[in-house]
Image (cartoon, rainbow, N blue to C red):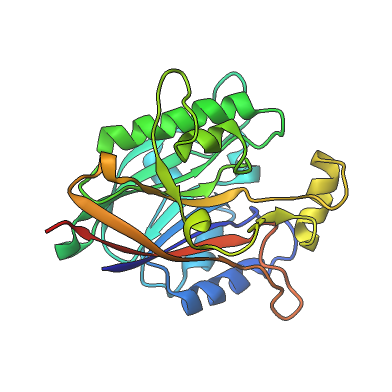
Length: 278
């Protein structure tokens, strides 16, 4: 079964108020089956998610629907949302706040998605700590993601999608992609871009006018760009009864539409062929 995965950080409600309508139009065109959205503000006053997913025909869950509390800063920086073409059931919302990253309001949502005869898979939408010096927090976040997967893993390979705020050379990403261990543990997820993308694939870059001010404030250097957004797919050793072949990977939301840039991040889209082994 061919499954299309898209991840996008929608940049809360910064910038032009029409951005979310542009994102919605692009999502209608791209037709994802699994959608991970980050920095989505969904409050009684600001219902960004409603605009973004309107008319997609997907089952949608925002972290606020499954958390018993509203994390600090979520009214400004939003939260995580999952949308799936086929039914899903959220099994856990992981609170990422730790002493090294107390200001992170974005939960990691883990949902079991029923793909019918193809089987069931665990879909995790996530965002890691933002600050450049918070790699220790991102390492702990990566460990927590692997443990979250282990608690709810299904026969089909797990898909993790989101804004991990770290380049491929960072320890957190090296751990997730099987290049190094952390705290005596090791895992291996396939990086869709590495397997099937083309070029560096930078997703947060000052080439994007929406990112330029943030990069200037946070990084303070010109010509900055990093690949922060990922689609990761579980490996054979954790899923001996299932398969997930990454067929393609590309950046999306990387151009202005009628002069309007959709977000400060570019998104990542991956097509994956999944199924149970015979």
